[in-house]
Length: 522
Image (cartoon, rainbow, N blue to C red):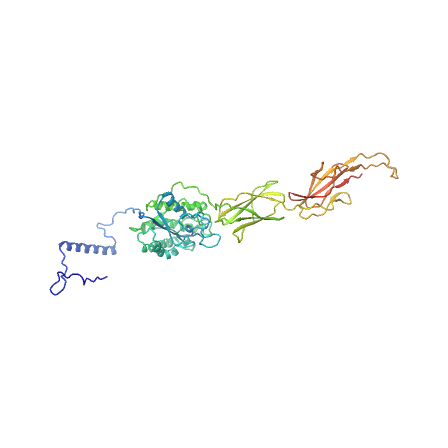
């Protein structure tokens, strides 16, 4: 760019009005010569490498990248994919890093970025604010399902708009899911760093290792690419480190177990979040001197949804009952456990029926094949993927359907062999009660009304009282009849007995028929 000096003073001009030519002194000439020699060396270096008199120097260990926190608030932009964004019900590793820096260390930090939500695993959109604990700085630049190249497309404008001092990047798994390989993903990481530095040359960068996957259809290939990516990441950090822009690696995959630390194939549960956050905290504190390392050993944290479902009985009839509860944040499925409490207690077992969502934001499950007259207890446990959360409190439900009516047409059959009766709606079985009748000894005197003059051998018998089982004395339960409506008469050796048939539905006693008298004949 030229500069107009026409309005400057003309003192020292020649007689013809021209300005005198600059004449350097001895020191000036020496300075010009040195400058020319330096430029020449730079030109030579650009073509043949660094000028090294006496040959190649011995190999030296690369000095670790170092940084320093800015004056005032340190702005941190976290960039990544679903592992960084998180989903409903998650704390996210961003939360755990924020809590460490802000509350445990007292660092003056601010998270920046264009987004503040997580993915709603219920399917209602990625703008969900459903954090397990929303009390932290939620801003980020992570996008569910994004490969590194997709993140690079917007990183320049994001850095320009939010002006972060630190950029934390953890991405690459989606590159492999899409068929890419580690060298390609690493080159995309380099491009992202270059693009971000065009906007801010003193950006301090932390690259997170990728965590392993488990349970996909392609575990072997994916984990091989992840391992290759992680192995090469320190070299990328060293190569991309600039004088004012250090690049360091967070050892996020160290001690990380996909079986224990993921809630599904890929995404971290609470334990995994903590391990990732601790690794980033260590990288920020060590080389970059922001904050402090995460305290060890890491605390034990519960996994799975931590909100208890509040379960109630929404409906009950003679055949079933319906349990209902409000959806639990972050739950991807529920397990309903059932146990018969009394009578005849049994083991707690999971129901095979899947709960279904309703439009009012609640879940419900229909429970059938319950036994009338029994008391059951139910527990609902929410799961996120494979991680079970806090169980509901026990709900006790007496299942008392309407008792069946008393049997009708109870009688002795024509051959005097069976007690028979009519069918009863909803009765599952019948109980037969017996009581011996009061009988007088038979008389040896001739019966005056008997034309043959024979004596009366039949005893004179009558009921003990007019009360049935449960009220009268002497009654004994002698048989349970399933799948039939007759019973072979047995007086237990007594000359006469009365019988009562009671309907049952499972454990629930129904109506009792009127007593039927039976006298044994010689």
